[in-house]
Image (spheres, rainbow, N blue to C red):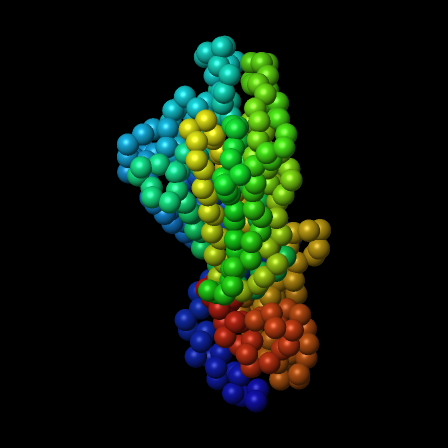
Length: 300
């Protein structure tokens, strides 16, 4: 069996050029919306309003896409110095970079009102995944307004990480940058946490594993006086305060390289159960882990 395994890896090794590294908590990808997502991750908007600067064609007050605080008068909080009488906004004057904005997606350019953004990233060998992002919102939201993110691996079933809901039973007080306060009914809430007009960071565990992660954000919002912004979205591995198992790092040197091939063969041929050799995450070490090990070693 060992000779067979060596033959497999002898052929496959010619195709492998990259390595995977572990640094405690590993960055799967980050999306600041100021550039493309990191680490080769991709994002796809539906609909894609990039040609219109993140707004729908017929109104700058209908927003889904990458925008800045000047997209319209609703997002920017100008109360500090630009317009002290301003009573609405979630983006402070000092924040001039881009973010992901949502406003009134139920409009004449978007039948049905729903929009989505999908990220795809390589997660081969990674465990203990966590989604984090910054979010701010302001407005009198409706019960039908929805924000959710789902996760799936390798085309499998999707797991809902969270789902929002307007809290129709309370009034929320928003404090503008200039110090004024505004009371509005029916604030935006995620898992019971009220989202205010200052960015706050939320994190959610992703329980699955696989070679390729697909994150899908879905949003529906009906009302020009309701704005939501997301920024600095990231997915990391090895979260939750648990030491991560770097799948494929069979020699336990903190990296997945060619030096792991012989230790992997040894564990496989001796019917071992080392967690790092269980590359397809099915709880066993056997021939089914070979392709997963190759994928991890090649960075697929």
